Amino acid sequence: MLLGLAVRWSPALALGVAILGAQQALRLALGSDELDTWAPASAGFLLLVAELAWWSIEPRVPAWSEPWLAPLRLVSVLAVCASGAVLAGIVLVIASSQVGGGVVLELVGVLAAISALALVAWVARTHVR
Image (tube, rainbow, N blue to C red; front, side):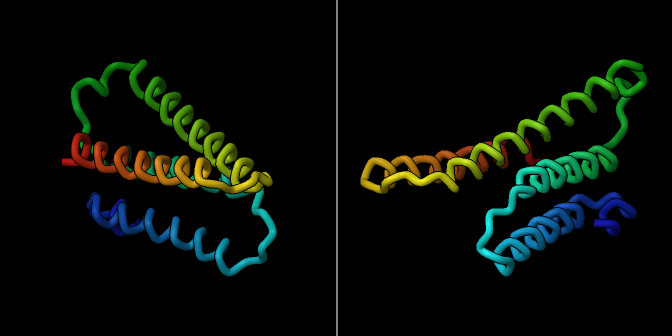
């Protein structure tokens, strides 16, 4: 990730963020079976690191001379990261709750996975250059 920041190269940033996420996933996979209550905070901070890294390498445009634009963007980035942490917390609570299985619950899970993949594909297609 430092290489990507130093040379302003987006693929290196993506690899760095992926390695940070994989490190967290590996820590959770190899750790105890106990529920990690800090996982939502880790998710929010990882999103914040990624957002700030890409923000730091993007080209400066004349609009950045507006004094109110940077604080507004910072507040929006912090709000998105906090929302991501809250959403991760909700997923953690739902995943740790005891519910009976069944076809309906299996269908909800499959639809949620398909929706998540569709959202990622849509963002990649429309926002990645």
